[in-house]
Amino acid sequence: MRIAVIGTGYVGLVTGVVLAEFGHDVICVDKDPEKVEKLKQGIPTIYEPGLEELLKRGVSEGRFKVTASILEATRASEVIFIAVGTPPGEDGAPDLTQVREAAAEIGKGINEKKVIVNKSTVPVGTGDLVEKILLENGAPADCIDVVSSPEFLREGSAIRDTFEPDRVIIGASKRSAALKLVELYAPLERPMLLTDLHSAELIKYASNSFLAMKISFINAMSQLCELAGANVGDVAKGIGADSRIGTQFLHAGLGWGGSCFPKDVTGLLATANSYGYDLPLLKAVIDINKDQTRLFLERMEFRLGGFNGKKIAMLGLAFKPNTDDIRDAKSIEVIERIVAGGGFVRAFDPVATANMKAACPPNNQLEYADGLYDVAIDADALILVTEWNEFRNMDLGRMRSTMNQGLLYDGRRIYDRATVEQAGFEYHVIGESTRETSDERLQLYVG
Picture (cartoon, rainbow, N blue to C red):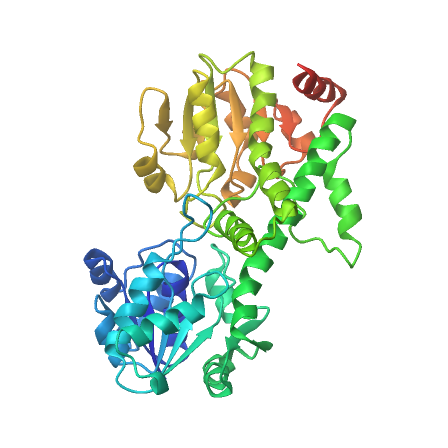
């Protein structure tokens, strides 16, 4: 098939290279000339394991092309994916500006029967909006079918998730349009669910919000475990062993962030509000997530006697491992709180440092280390924020030997207490406490 993909972010670029790998002729669109030129040369504009190899192969074999013209891509294609950004607005509702702009340009280029697929995460009714905009911009009514096919990619494993999705959602009002997508996705050999347009649009928001709820629930349990002297790891295993609950997304930590969960949870909340439904459950999910990093940092601040004048080493900047994405990353919150308290932060990340430097430039209270073992020199405490494998396997004794104080705060629960303590660290971890830490947490709450 001849495929156009509007947008070359995580969703658009990964979708484009995978469809090209399946043998389709793909043309991706981005309005940034610098991105267009890089992609034409087979140079990825995002970090994602496995992406570069597929991109280079698609370009070299002529199946993957890039342009800055939506009009050109529309006229050359029979299926057009809209995969542009839908960032949250001030009220939490998604900003559909890029979707509107893309639809308007597509409408101007409709010259034969086309299937237009919303791949972006959008609220209920966006498919109707896109169809309206297409018609307003000259698209003949009998030449357009609008479909919703939300993505479920996880950054860091987006290539694998595209090749091996749990399910494929196709929402359409016409059977012929749905079957066109069934044909396109057939090489995946995965379960396909055909729904109406509105249900498909809601599925993405509902899925991510449910997963965020599971994380916030176990994080709420982690706070109770710290107060009660229990171990949230054991609690998670105990409840996760119930087949009705399952083990996934029951890993306590600093909370969720990134490009999807924050905007999708607030997006679903805004959608519910637009229909007059309050959805208090999601408000609690958001509140728990906001508290998680703050409460862990309060433990560190209490133990240090305040951040003023203290040097804190930080491992991890990306919101999760295997990506350079720092959108809504917990590292930003950590940096801001320590710096506001008069402390100094030295941070290290295997791939996300350049992005963080652009967002939070180095200054007299913030520095970025060039290497893993440089980060903790003369530090009073070490906090792990992102669970990169490089950090799991580091030499703890070597790290401890360069520090002023041996305080290790594990925000992702990746270390074994006995191993950490044998290396000379005083170990503090989310959702687990010694009696002293329980007393410390109680003092924080009552004080």
